[in-house]
Amino acid sequence: MMKFCKFIFFVIVLSSCGKNFLEVKTASNIVTPRTAADFQAILDNGASLMNANQGYLLSIVGSDEYYLSSSAWHALPLRAVIQKNAYVWADNVYEGNTVDDWNEAYKRILNANVALEGASNSEPEPSTAEEWNNVKGSALFFRAYNFYQLAQLFCKPFDSNTANQDLGIPLRLEPDVTLKTKRATLAQTYNRIVADLEEAADLLPDRGMIKMRPSKAAALGLLARVYLQLDDYQKAGQYADQALAIQDDLVDYNTLPTDTPFPFNRDYGETNAGVVFFSASPTVTVLHNSRMEVDTTLLALYDVHDLRRTMYYDVGNNGNVFFRGSYYGFSVPFTGITTSELLLIRAECSARLGYTEAALADINQLNAMRFEPGSFQPYEQLDAEKALALVLDERQRELAFRGLRWEDLRRLNKDPKFAKTIYRKIDDRLFTLEPNSSRYVWPIPPDVIELGGLEQNNR
Image 1 (tube, rainbow, N blue to C red):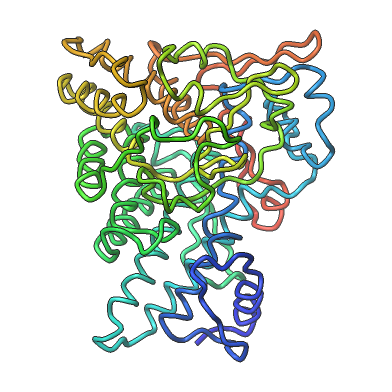
Image 2: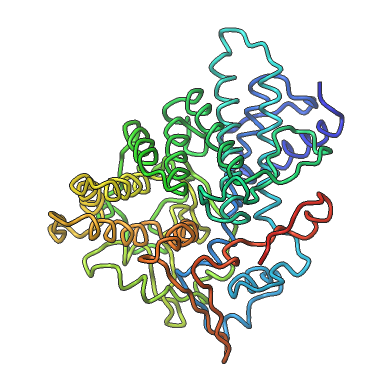
C-alpha cells in the first residue's frame, strides 16, 4: 500500500505533536495508518504543523503596514537574517538558510496527500462514511490552502492574458516524496486550488468541530479569497455570500477588554465568533513590540472613535506604536479566515459590480461592531468609485497584519488608481518596491532549485 519511508514519516509526524488540541490518542503500536481516525489524527496536528507556521512570513515582512528604524534593523538577531533581507526586498534574501514559508507548506501538503491516499484506498462502511468525508474534505482544503499561500509568494500575480505561460508552483498530488514535480503553469495552479476547494466544500460539515478543522464555510470562504485574486468579482462575491449564509457572526469590539496586553483570547479562535478557520504565521521577529513602528498612513485611516485603533495597537517602551490585535491572542499573527474578511470581499465585489447599496450595507454592518456606541454614522449614497475606495480602506483597517496586505498590493497594483510604491530607509540608503515589480515574487529557495531542477523566478 505505502512505502516504508512513508511509515517513518507517519511516526515522526504523529510523535511530534505539541499541544494536542483535540486530545486525539494515537496508539503506540500504530505504524501504518488505516482507519479514518488515524488519518484524521495526521490532519489534526494543528498546533505544531497543519494550522501553524503558515506561509505568510515573507508577505508580512515585505508589506507596507510597518517600518523599522535603522538601529532596529541593524540590531536584528542573526536568526532573523531572512526577515532582515526581506524587509528591503534584497537580491540574496535567504543567504543559504532554509525557507520555512516553502518547506512547512510542502510538509502540510505531504500530510494532506497521505490522508487523501488513505481515503482513496478505503472502503468505508456506511457508519464511517461521514468520518472519511471529513478526512478527504479536510485534506483537500489543507492542500489548496497551502498551494494558495505558495502562489502568493513564489508566483506572479494572476493575469488571465498570461496565466497559461506564467510559472506556477510544483503541484505535488501524491505522498511519494521521491517523485520529481516540475512547476505547473499559473493557470494550472489556480485550477487545482479551485477544484480541491469545490470538492472539499461538498464533503465537509457546515462548521468544523473546532476552528482548527476545515469546514464548508472555510472552503467557501477560501474560494472567495481565491476568486478575488483572479479578479472574478462575480464568483468571489457569490462564494463569500454562501460562506456568510453558514456563518455571519461578528465580534462586537465594545465587549472586549482594554486593560490586557492582548484583547483576544488565546484559545485557537474557539471563543471568537468571527473566526471561521484558525491558522497562524510563525513568529515574526521584526514585529516585536520593541522594534516595529506601525505605518503612520495606516494609523491615519482609523477614526478617533474606531475601537480598532486601541484594540489593535499600543505604545511600546520606546514610544513606538506596535500591533497587538492578533486573533491568536498573542504576538503571533493570525492568518485564518473570518466573517469580517468575507463581508469585505462581498462588499468589494458589490462595489466593483455597481451594487453600491449592498457594498455600503456590509461596511455598515461591520462598523457597527467596531465603533464606540453611538459614534458611527452609517455610510449612504456613495457612488461606485467612492464606495470601492471605502472598502479598500476598510480592508486595511480591519485585516491589518494578517498577511493579506501583500496579496492586496499585488492585485491592486495592476490598477493605476490604486498602485503604490513602498519605501524603506536604512541609514542614508533608500529602498523602493515599485508597483508590479518582479520583487513581488520571492525567489524559490536555491536548495529546492538544485534538488528539483526547477526554474527560478526572474527578479
